[in-house]
Length: 304
Image (cartoon, rainbow, N blue to C red; front, top):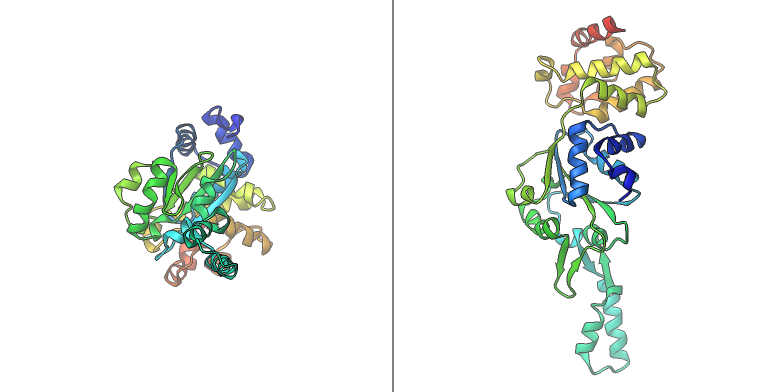
């Protein structure tokens, strides 16, 4: 871990900003403690609020490799931890038979050597050399409960058990970030092994800073309009009209689209034409009418 980034919470905030990630103090405190205490950090929140981006930013700040385990329904242990190179093992056994090797027990031991082991993300993270890796276990809520149980040994002790080899412990403690969109509740056993932070939509000033940093070609006035418009979309009573409010990722993408369209001032027609960037559901796109867009734009126009 790099000392400047860990010297204080403020130093961590500044280091993250240096790589384009704007963390508020509560989030920075959670990250700081996770690093200091060498504990996994579980981030929950709506899609697009910056959970995955935090792990990517941390890898840059700490100058560590980023290893990503993307979770999905039906994810198996062998896809997360390891599997054997069965084709190479079979070739080895056939070669031993061709040489007339009589000690088949020795041959079997040989095929479970390190060179036949295919390392998947968890094992890669545990065996990463100093200073270690940043392991992102992304969207863990998409995996099933047995997979959660499988993770407990890693999360609690930074080790895993491989029947043919034994226990593999971390060479250098990985910085571990778990993310969840809360499509289902995670088991308490997982939560107890992690520090926890709920990552919410950003306040207006932080979102404006993110848009300006990520879309430097956007004018100051356009960046303000984007931040104000999306912020109001998430507020009541407008938020009730949509299945899911736009996240930071959509704000940034929308700003890039507006710049590509040479937009100087956002108007209801532009909003209607680009609604598919802010929303990914047909019903939400339809719900953002021109009349609603006009209402949402009024405060931004008054401030500008």
